[in-house]
Length: 442
Image (cartoon, rainbow, N blue to C red; front, top):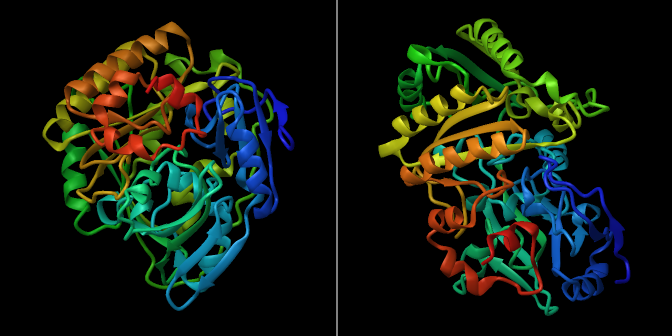
């Protein structure tokens, strides 16, 4: 396999699983043809990858071949009059922001890290704090260039009638190698955000705040104390925001410290989590209005490099679910009670609501309802047992899990949660694969 080198350190962000693969990193578009042909013939076939910020195994291809697309990071065009950006798939959202903010534009949808490539964002159809207004990033993609392992490259737009565009949006990289993306940007008057934080005492208050805020605020999200019990079950801090109406258009400096070593596993225990959650709720939960840079609002974790090492060498699982509105409050309450009983909580527990803004993607994760996302240090069987219990609650409520976040999503639950799966199957490129897809055994 010319150009592919063996690697044993290619990990998803959750650092589970650890695997061996062969990987190539092209710098120019004309290198792709040969690499795709070689990689698709490898055992376990081929997967294109970006910055591998997916927490689970959707971004790795253990025992197979991978093309690291981060070297294909060239901008093709940027129309400042229309806000239309054309770039190679390996361009990161961080680099997009550097280019477009001074021109008065912002990403229409962004996940909680800017260290994601455009190709990866499309393949996982990322969402953000403004789903109730903007939906997923797939709604803002105007065109995709997709190279299949048979050597044919196709340009796909929203007007595509074959279904290939819809399959590629959120298609987990299985429909081919995304080579170029055309994205519609959002105009902004300032790089600052007008932000309001409001503490809430229980889950019912969260749902009242969410319903009130979605009509008047572009962005909503809440931190929730996942170890609170009884009358304070689901307490937390609600944040809502809008882009500033005036001010500078300045790119925020993103440099910060990095975690150099894996933290000892004993640091994350019931006592430390309980103490952190109590202190954070008491001191960060004051009701206030502030004007801040976009960076701490959208990307608070990006200021600490390699923060995933804080969970120790064994890694961690992120669990993100969504349940429909009719069952949202009781199901979320039951999940939080189950987590609190085990003491395996999370510093980073995020709760928000999704709007009725459908994505064009066949396997897109968001649906109208409530989403809860938490990190769990990998403690082996006890952690997996807890996640199984959460699965039962989510499935009973008619919900589903996010493949980009969950490194142990059961195949039966994936199939139950994604009714468009049968429509997706015909568009799979049979020279493409991933550890996730083989684990689904589909």
